[in-house]
Each structure stands twice: as structure tokens, then as C-alpha cells.
Length: 140
Image 1 (spheres, rainbow, N blue to C red):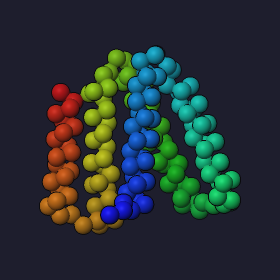
Image 2: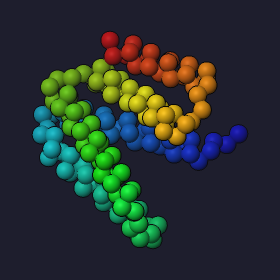
Image 3: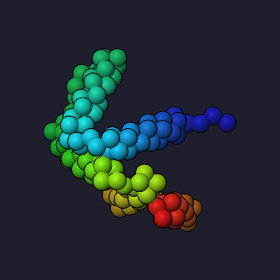
Image 4: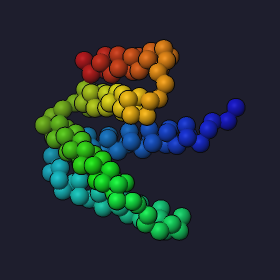
């Protein structure tokens, strides 16, 4: 049985996201100044986005509404990255900080259910509950 493309992309995001947050731990443990680190990370992010545009030969195309949404998301992403970098710089342990930050998935799931009216069933609730439980256990 083959895995669907959205699931494979989700696994790619999982791996890349995990590496990204682990690199934040390394940066924080090396007393990096968060805003400087964030600027360089943002430049690298932008270069990759431009390369994708070039490879796909697609012009920049974003409505004013989606530009606002991207800016809104970017602000929250910046606060999240800065908080993580600072937590690690202050001596936070990855085995505690990562699971707590990982609870952000709960926020995403709740917003998806409320805003997009995604169906809720016992299997999803059980999975979410098990995920939250594992994060609580890991952070102790």
C-alpha cells in the first residue's frame, strides 16, 4: 500500500521541523543572541522560498488578505522562535522545552475544529489525548 503525498509531506515537515527546533537548542546553548540568529534564519528561509519560485517558474502571487495572514503568522512564528531560543539560552533542557512547545499542536487542532468545522470523533480525541499525555510525561 502506498503512502499518500500529503502524508509523505507531513513526515518531511516533521523531520525538518524537528531538526530546526533542535538547532535552536544548539544555538541557545551557545548563548546566541536570538534576534541576530532569527535574521540569518529568516534570510535562509527567504532564499529557499525564492529558489522554489525560480524552479517552479511561478510569479509572486499573494492577495492582500493572504499577505496580512502571512504577516500575522510570521509575527507569531517570530515570537515562538525567540521564546524557544531564550528558553534554551537560559538553560532550559530540550527534554522539557520541546514537549511543552509541542503542545502547540493542540492549539492547531482546536482551531481547525472550530474554524474549519473538521469532524471530531472518538479516535481523534483519543489520539490527541494520548499525544498530550505523552508530552506531559516527557516534560517531567
